[in-house]
Image (cartoon, rainbow, N blue to C red; front, side, top):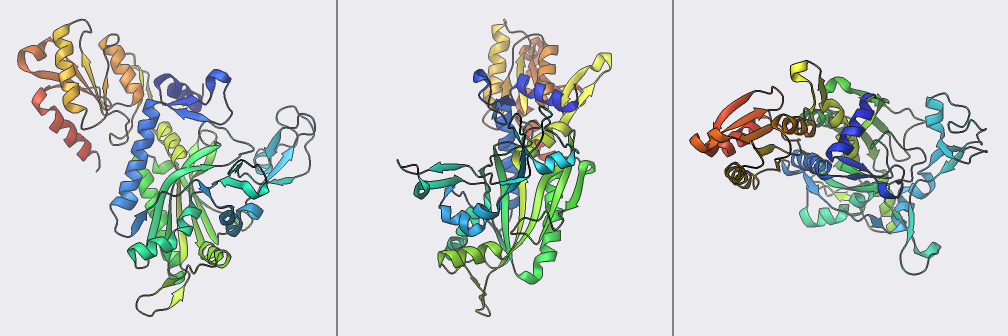
Length: 438
């Protein structure tokens, strides 16, 4: 198995990611997140929010609706200009994105070898209906991006908080795209979560702000444990640029299936605010508090894909040791990212006194961070199981614990063990987590 196949297998086996609708044969390009995948996503989002919103005075949080007025998508240009090129097999009638075919030099259908049609354009927005009538008048769209909810709430933030330029609005939320060619595990899916900022600036500041946010995005990736050596920058050609963008740079990651976009940084000019203002009739200009000049701010957009971040983290965390005395697979997550911080074991699962003491420790630690309980199998197997989950530390309650109130604390990365007083455990792990921020 290649690295990606090993990651997919581990994720299924250990409860990170499951195939969507699996008991009914699955639904292509949909995935469900198990207990550890859910915790991992939660940690990434919390660290992103802390880094870009909570620790700054110039960025305001938002949670916009998934369903917006269809007028929003008309004004933004998504209905007419948000298009993917596709070709259809004239034999099996499967469809493929033209750019994916061109990238691999494929001229015939990759499924059956049949002849491909001429290129067509396809809008990947999902349609649905509001109300009991399914007609054009009741058509709405699942949002293909989170940005538009920010733009249509720009005036609300101005009226509520009166922020000086530059300032940003951030949100984390689901987006939906009817991808023609998806795949590579969770890299490209029908629904995905974006962590996105629209940063409003004066036009003259755009290049300076663009460069600043590019550095910030790379620093955030590194803070999560993503290897900087696997990151590259690629600027979009004029042909590639989205209809709203004057400059876009992809921060790409070296995935096993190729170097692909991890994050995107776009200079959207004043396109969105100006269009929404003209189409809605609501003045979305910003007034300079000193000069009283009214103008449309320009926008720098740092966009982060949650699932792609999770995949990059899994790939960088995956380690395999083959030495006989150390033979194991483990996920070397930074402790702040790891889904479980500490696992608690009684040495034997049939000794009441050991179980009672281990459960007391579990109860003491669990209000402070995610803890795992494991009494299944021998200690060696439990260590290996927690290694695959990426748990930084394991606590074992043994017979010496009953004599001197100490436990064995085992480190995931070094596999070293030390005896620690039970009363010192909470402070020890808090200190270790705090030190891991550096």
